Length: 196
Image (cartoon, rainbow, N blue to C red; front, side):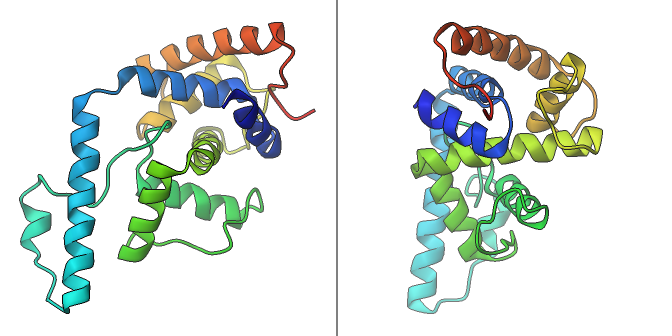
C-alpha cells in the first residue's frame, strides 16, 4: 500500500507523508459509528435502485428522518462523495487529474458511483485523498500545495481537509505530527515521498 501511495503522491506532486498522515489518523479514529453510517448509505442506495427498477416515485421521507442518508465519509481517507466530487471537478478544471467527466452531487448516479468507489477501490480513495488535500490547500492559500508549504500552511491544509475552516485545528496539528513521523519513516527506508 505504501508504494502505491508514494506513486500517486508523485503523480500529484505532493509529499506522500501528507496522504499517509491523513489516512493513519482517519483509520485510527474509525469506530462502529463509521461502519453503521456506511451501512445506512448502502441501504439508501439499495432502496433508490429498487425504486428506480420498479419505476416507483422516490419517497422524500427517506431524506427527512435522518437515519438513512445518501452520503457518508468512507474509505481510508474517510471522504464524503460530495467532497470527492468537488475535488475531482477542481482537478479536472485545473488539469491536475482528468476523471474523464464532471460529477454532480445533484445526480444520484454520480453520488452512488463516487461513494461506492471511495468505499471499495483503495487506489481511487488514495487518489481522491490527495486531490482533496490539493483542493483544501488552494482554498486556504490560493496556491497549489507543494513541499515548500510552511508547517502552518500544511496544518491549515489538513484542518481544511477535515472541516470548512481556514484556521489551524487540533485535527490539523495531529495530522501534521503524524505526517512528520511518516516523512522520517519514508526517508529512513529510502522510499520516494514526493515526485522525483
